[in-house]
Length: 203
Image (cartoon, rainbow, N blue to C red; front, side, top):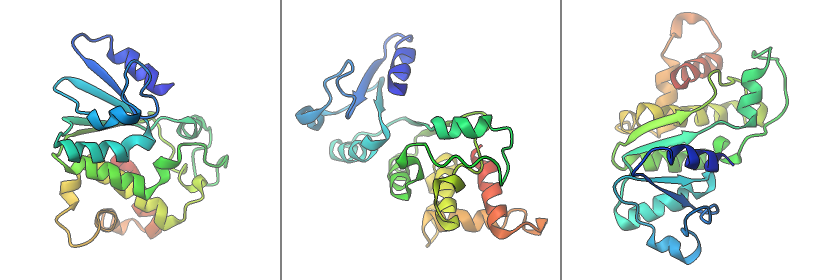
């Protein structure tokens, strides 16, 4: 449904071709099945895809030596909405479990997004609710280390993967080390301090 909304909003502008990629390829475009091998977006094209198709998009861009000028990830989903609407948006608040897409809490999926953003340093945007819930990842069942990894990859995507790539360490470790040194004298618990810094960076 969200892809349909994106398509109809974009089509309000003239001279833009919207390509729907992947499982939703039947919506105004035949980019599915065998025709996926012919997927080569051109200047002015806007490609819409669901989370699960990001890896396939990356593979086809590599095969066809094509890059995107900009990348936009829509992270709005029921889990984020419920978190932003909660009256007690603090630790110990409502615990409703994770209702969002599995990809958004997958380090492997965010690694693929980082790979997309590393190809030609495109413009990057994450669309989220105005008050994203700091504790939604905590309700996902991920451990503290995994939560910070997801937040660090999201931070790297927004700030720019190349900013953290020169390090000899992985991007999550480099981002977390950077965040750990921010506000070091605040007296906060180390995990809480890093999570707060990353949350402030990506909000």
